[in-house]
Amino acid sequence: MSLTILPAQTLAIVRALLTALPDPDAGSIALARTREPQLTKPPGSLGRLEELAAWIAGWQGRHPAGMRNPRVHVFAGNHGVAALGVSAFPAEVTAQMVLNYDHGGAAINQICQAFGIQLGVTALELDRPTRPFTEGPAMEEEEVLAAFNAGLTLDLSGADCLCLGEMGIGNTTSAAALSLALFGGTAEDWTGPGTGVTGSALETKIGVVRDGVAKHAEEATDGLDLLRRLGGRELAAIAGAIVAARLSRVPVVLDGFIVCSAAACLKAITPNALDHCLLAHASREPGHRRLAQALEMAPLLDLGLALGEGSGAALAVPLLQAACQCHRGMATFAEAGVSDKE
Image (cartoon, rainbow, N blue to C red; front, side, top):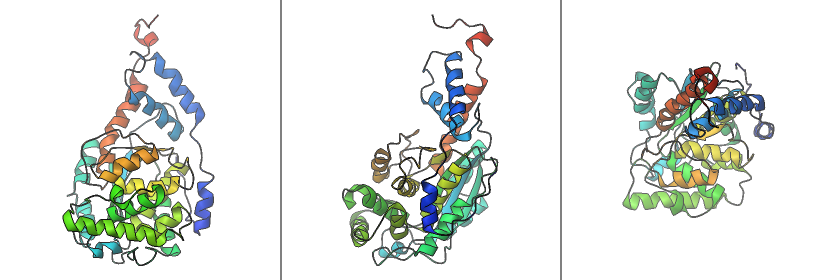
């Protein structure tokens, strides 16, 4: 559906918005569940594809569901903690990769081309990194609100699903810090190699995560405040896009560790905030599997990916397309003249 969503003026308005999110369309789900047992196959033989068909119908608010206009959107931001030696790559790579997306040279470009997916990219003040969260909040309220609104006001007209991706040197450090702050454990539990740090560099990264979370533990109030304190602009924009999709009746496909950490901030405020989201894959970043368990989300794929940029989410699109096409296109037992089970 086409819906114009106005920017939120304050974080209090965002919090209020999160308490009034729409539910799936029960009528569309009922129609899907009525049709599914009539299709020419043994019950349950298409496994999760059967569940996906009903889930997509419910969140699109139509039956049968369709998946002809999938979209990927990548948000990019720069992090102050990148200057603390937490990444194998320098911060300027963020802007360089955005140019690569624009020129069609990245992996996500190829995956989108292979499956007919529309790709969008939003760069968020790359010349102004967030401040290191070991020194203070990564963003002031107006900064996180502006980034959140970049996602909240994303034009989703005509979209059948929204696959979310990110780019930002240092953002696995933010993801680890957010996960630790939200779900507990130790910094070692959540902090992984990211772009490839090992040895003393990994120890440095673990220390940054531990120190940053400890610094904000007493003052942080909720998931949105943690996003402001420990996150980045691209994470805030992803959170905004998740809310925009919910309001626009567009199912969301979450990518890797960073995207899921942004999503977790919403769930920490409203337990059903991610009901319209599914997890595309389990990446090889150690914290991602732990986070998927904490979010109670089962991945569709497990391919050993660790790229980000929405690559895993885009690879899940053909499964969603297959689920919709099987549900829509298969004949029923009556139509095909096939004997049903007795």
